[in-house]
Length: 162
Ligand code: SME
Image (tube, rainbow, N blue to C red; front, side, top):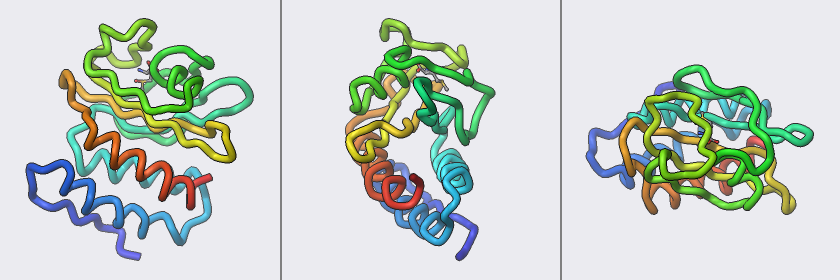
């Protein structure tokens, strides 16, 4: 397995995701350790995009616990239904937040975060973790991010990282 990522020089984030996802799949498919794979996925996303923070919160008992991530230090525990992550867990659906200040109950782990997308990983009808991505820019995420990040969680994380 090659450990260097090829990051195309493009301004199209769709093209960037389309190039990155097969590389992420190649990176994780021969490794069975969940933490190792989630760590590499966070690193791959952080190196391809100018995200402030990208990482995982894993469902353990009745809480989300901080998992592998890249970016500034973050809150370690989030309750069911709290913040954007806890809401994505409760509703079992992707939540796009164009302006974190306008999301009631948003948990500000970093004061630099302005917008956010949280994508749950659903396995056998239950959320097992969430992928959380934060940006320093307002409205940084849209349907393109949703499409590719849902593809990542369903097709790659669902297959190789549970
Ligand atoms: N903003 C998140 C908390 C996690 S950090 O952004 C890394 C939330 O409201 O759930």
